[in-house]
Every structure is written in C-alpha cells, then in structure tokens.
Amino acid sequence: MAFASPEIERPSPEKFVDSPLDEDIPLTRVKSQERFSGKSSPLESACVPLKRGDSKSGTIIADGSGSGGKLRSFTDLPTNLVYEILQRLDAKELGVVSCVSTLLNSLASDHHGWKDFYCERWGVPFGLNAQSSNQKSWKELFVDREFRSKSFMGRFCIDVLHGHTEAVRCVFLLQTAKLIFTGGYDTAVHMWDMEEGLSIGVSRSLGCTIRAITADSELLVAAGTDAFLQCWRAIEGHPHLFDIAASLNHNSNFRLWGHEGPVTCLVLDSTRIYSGSWDTSVRIWDRAHLKCLRTLRHGDWVWSIAPRGGTVASTSGRDVYVWDTDNGYLTTIIHNAHVGNVYALARNHSGDLLFTGGEDGAIRMYMVCDHCDDDDIKPAATWIPHTGSVHSLSFEFPWVVSSSSDGRIALIDVQKLLKWRQPCSSRQRYKVKHSAPEAVEPPQRMLHGFGCNLFSVAIGSDRIICGGEEGVVRIWNFSQALEIAKKVEALRSIRLENRMRRRKAQTEMSGNGARADQCSVSAKKNQLNAERIGVWHSKRGLTGKLKP
Image 1 (cartoon, rainbow, N blue to C red):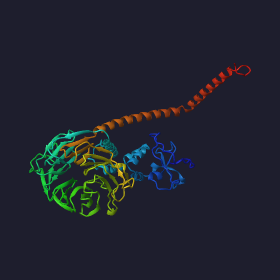
Image 2: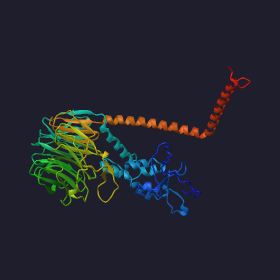
Image 3: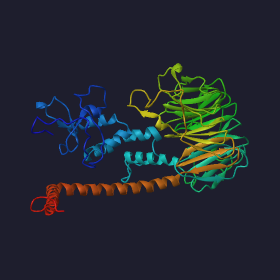
C-alpha cells in the first residue's frame, strides 16, 4: 500500500499497535530497525506502528529498498514469506498475532504450525477425520486441549473401584476406548468402564503376579513374574474390544516367551512391543510376526522403559539409558540419576524431555538431544515432593504425575519451566527458562490421605487413576472442574462482549457529537459564570461597596 506523501510523520516506537477488532487492547509492542540494532524477533524487525486508519493490518514494512523509500503493508509480503515469519512464533505469540486484524487472524488461524504444536504436546488425536466437513481446525483442537489441561487444578470427585483381592501393582488407561486395565497380586487382569466405574470383565488367573499392563485399540498385553507376555487381540464388533474372560487357549489370545526373569514394564507403539525385565534386558518385539527383533542388555535390573520415535529410554540401577531401536546402539547414558535405584520413567511426545523418579523420593527432568555429551547431562529441574520412593510416573502435557510409597500423588506443571524454541535440525523443541540445576521446584498440587505404597499411576481424559497396597483402584475425576471452568469462561466472554459494545457505542457518540458536546459544555460554563457575576453585583450598592 503506497502513501501519497513521503514525508510521513514517524511515530514513537513506544506506542502500541491499534487493532481494528479491539481498539482498547494493546496487543504487541513493535520496534523500528533504525533505532534498535539488537537481535529481535522476525515481527519486531519487520514492523513499525502506524497511526489509526493508516493500514488495515496495523503494521508496515520499514524497507527503504522500495521505489522512493515508500512504506508498504506487512500483508503485502508474499504469502510464503508471511507463513515463514509465523513459523518462527510459539503458540502464545501466534495467538496474539491472530488478534491484530481480520487478515492476520485468517493467516494465523489457518497456519500449519497449530498442528505441529498439538502433535508435539499430545500426539495425533484419535479419530481425526480429514473428510468431515464439521471437523475442528488445528487451532480449535489446540485451544480446547490446552483449556482441558487446566482442569487438574480445580475441583474433583473420587471414585473407588473394588474387585481386587490383593494389592494392585499396575494400572493402565486406554483413553480412546474409555477403558481401565488393572492387575496385581491376585494374578488376574481386571477391565473397568472409565465413565461408569463398573467392572466389565476379569481374566482367568495367569498364575503369577501381574506387574505391567499396556494396550491400544488392537492389542492388550500383560506380564508378570512368570516371564511371559500374555496378549489379547481386539475382537471386531466386541463392545469392549477385548474378551479377556475367554479361555487362555482362545484364538484371540497368545503368549510370547523369551525373558528369563519377571517382566516389570511394558509399552506398545504401532509396530512393536517393548518389555523390560529383571533379567537385565529390554526386548523389542515385532507385532506382526510375533518375534523378538532385538535384545538390549543392561548391567542391573530394568525397572522402566519409555520409547519415543526411534529411541527407547530405560532405567537400570541408578542409571538411565537411551538406545537407538533400529541398530541397538547406546546413544546416551545418565549416570547416577538418583541416590538409589531409578524406579520410574516418563517422556514427552517429542522425546526431548525425560522425567525420572527414584528411591530418594525425587523427580528430575533431563533435556535429551541427538548429540549430547554424557558428561554434560545435568538435571534441568528437580522436585522432591515425596518422603518415600517414587514408584510410578505418568506424563500428559503439561502435567507430570507421580505415585510414591508415602501414599501421596504429586502433580507438577512443567510448562512453567519450559520455553519453546525455534525448530532446528535436532529434535529438541524446548529449553529451560532458567539454569539452576541445584534449585528444587515445588509441586503444583498434592493428593494425599490414603494408604501407603501407591505402586502405579496414570493420567488422561481429565482423570488420574492410581492403585496400591490397599487393593482398590481410585479415580480422581476432574471433569466437574472442567464444566465449572467452561461456565466461567462463557460468563467472562459475555461480560467482555457487553463491555466492548458499550465502549463502541461511547466511541461513536463521542465521535459524532464531539463539537456539539464541547459547545454545550462551554455554554454551560459561561452561563454559570454569568449567573455568579450577576449575583455578586446584586450584593453591591450603587457605590460599588458591599451591602451591610
């Protein structure tokens, strides 16, 4: 957009950009390249503020290379370049940009970066149908999921599931099917309805303590002290996917043998099964051919595993290992991660954040990248919320949930410590806002008042599920907090809309009758002054002196 006069008045860089959508909200503060030569964000280096009415986008390009040094609109840039600039922003900054103007709202809302933000935090959403016409956009999915994650700081109700006769060693939440699987010392796998809290089925006795369970929409796997993996295939048309009550020689279930000691941990991905055992090994199984592809040997008992992408992390003794699953090479070792054994492990979806829980009651966060030196890996953050050993960790962005032998559950919000970084060649997408490894961070919430020895915990679908020595399964349901938060948000939106309408009406009234109002005010003042002068003179006599 060209301007008629090249001698345009340069505004102060301390002014805020005016928004055509919301005139009273300062959205971004931008600086000119001529005055500030330091490093700045792409939008800061490309934009300077305009006076109201100069441009529909509210920003212009300070580019002297144009003909006659004329200033052009930011939105006059090629679409690919605008998208590249938006790609450098994080989710919060992209949301702010979408509020600047109608055009930037369209560009920022449709930006493919929202998909990256969502998948980096929570993975690909289940049941996403690209053919559906009423499918939510990636921005709407991200905002909705971010809103739901805040429910864990609100109210909750507790459901207690009875059915086990002995201690519960492991719990697993299958969010896509709204099912809960539990196992323990009573040698059977229990399946529960997540919404109703009712028992759906109980498997035949496996003849051993069940220490690990994992599942997806196609396969359910349980393992324990007898060193085999008991698997159930999903049955098409079955109301609850798996028929775990069927006999163990049924066509829908089978066993995998190979470990020589108790199996302590299990994880599934789309093509493989991962299992860790006290025989000091991690085995990687092919789901299609039902055979062991690779065995990763350790120097001590394996307590926990967490695969992400092409790597799998494991804990053995006091150390944490990261392996390349394609060739079996050891890529990273974290020595002496805790004082005592490292019992629990969790990772985020991108794999660059690794959380450990140990015998010392501490929880630590490590930043893991492709080419990091083992000697330089230090805890990025440390929490000590427990007085006993941390037996289990579960992660759903931004929450790390831990269960401990002290009978308490800790909720930790890691988003407060992280800062998003621009995509680069490495997989590391986050960095810590401060570098103080010796500092101990406080947990955001503690759930307590229960028996000791909570062995396993899971988080998802606005719920936290935990099992322990008491032999019951507890569910903390935070959906009530979510409903309350939605009502509060709706009321806030209504109040904001009414406030904006009143301000818009006041602006129109002041704009249309500004001079008339000024004249009426002046007339009133003159009238009052005249009345006062008249009263003053009436109190004087003909000689000009005050009457007694």
